[in-house]
Image 1 (tube, one colour):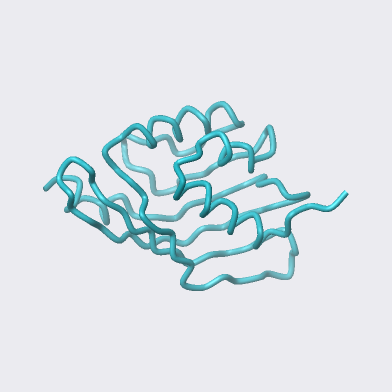
Image 2: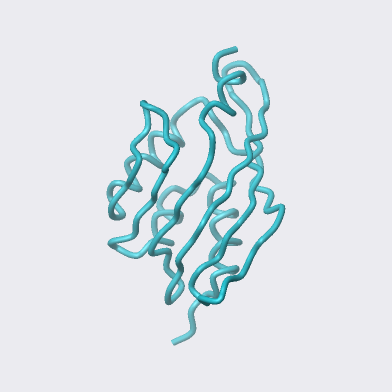
Length: 135
């Protein structure tokens, strides 16, 4: 069986998120996949375990006034472990209620095996979204 490479999985993730395909995005994860948000603010969970938790948060995000317009990988780093990829990312988006745009930077670490995301850690600063979200 042929699987998507980690970089192909990340390219597919971008496509699915830009098309607001929540089910497709959730399908990129292993059934017991994990999203870690180490710097999550008080309104966000620090960890999502399993596809249902990922689906629940992704559905709420998709229904919110925050639209992702682009995910720009500034740099992709391959590690000595072929399953681990690190991405410097700029997420560009729009607050649909006001039309205000924003650009948020993050470092994302992925462990991808057999074409499925086992672990996705998103190191972003929620304060970076403060101005556009509060305006």
